[in-house]
Amino acid sequence: MKRSTCFVFLSFFLLGLFGCSYRLGDFTVLSTKNVELGAKYEKVGTGEESDEVFVLYIPLGSPNIENAVDKILDNKQGDLLTNAVINAYNYSFLIGVMGYKVKGDVWKRAALSSIDDSKEYYQLTQNEGELFLVSCKDPNKMIKAQQKHKSE
Image: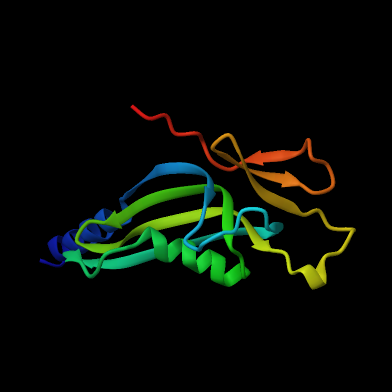
């Protein structure tokens, strides 16, 4: 009897360790806030956050990508992400967790009073329907922020 009970508990424990994760997408620029064209931005670091819910036979809620992005931006006091990657994961059989993980480079709007010549700032600009973060020091250095959408 003890041997079969131990086997059942061990089986459920091992099944709980299994799960999967997959990449939902890569985003050149990602934000849940309004950003201003022409404003100067500075990179404040890299962040990684997740929004997850517990699973107890059924999910006890619904994970949200927007919450994960908001957590990164709030923790780093940023306004937008570049080179953002979103992954979904589900590590549960009967019990476990599921959610979304977001990571990327965090940028905040530079305050005019704190602009320092030793730092590199980028300006968000639009050219022929495409958005770019252009270096204020070297205009040839730019990060493409949005792909041009073709109308069908």
